[in-house]
Length: 192
Figure 1: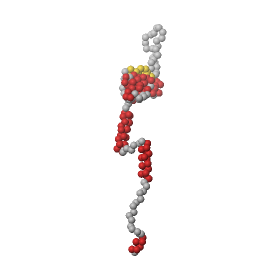
Figure 2 (figure 1 turned 30 degrees about the horizontal axis):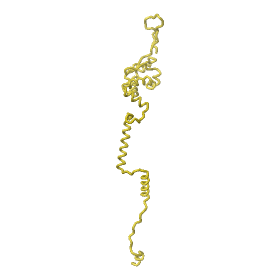
Figure 3 (figure 1 turned 180 degrees about the vertical axis):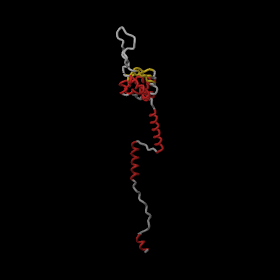
Figure 4 (figure 1 turned 135 degrees about the vertical axis):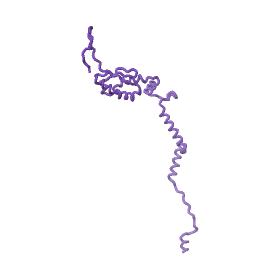
């Protein structure tokens, strides 16, 4: 039996050394590093990459917080006409006169088409808007809706721009014609 074992293993007994294996992933990584170096890209570690990402995030946050333009810093930041006008109105303290103009010009959008068809603003002074209605029933309706309208004005125009709404009924025609008139109330009608 010993002979069979010796015949099975010819010659002296050798230790087997593993052959070096080809690692495709490692070879590809090395190839990509060489390509990046040839383009001038530098390899950085994770700590340095995290620091760069933090700096970029902080810069983005500063840019998003900044409402005023840096126009006076380096003179290269162009501004739109709307931004220039907003800053001018804010710096000069013209916000309430601009609000007056927006109330009178945007009345239809502020109160809605149904109310705007029957009630029109006449004047706006000292946070009070004077509104003339075409009938006494619409004047009553607008007086009842004044609280809701004030809330809408606060939302769309800013708090405190309009504090009161003075509602006027329809204007009755004048019965004075000619040189001679008679004292008295004239015809008894409500005109609306």
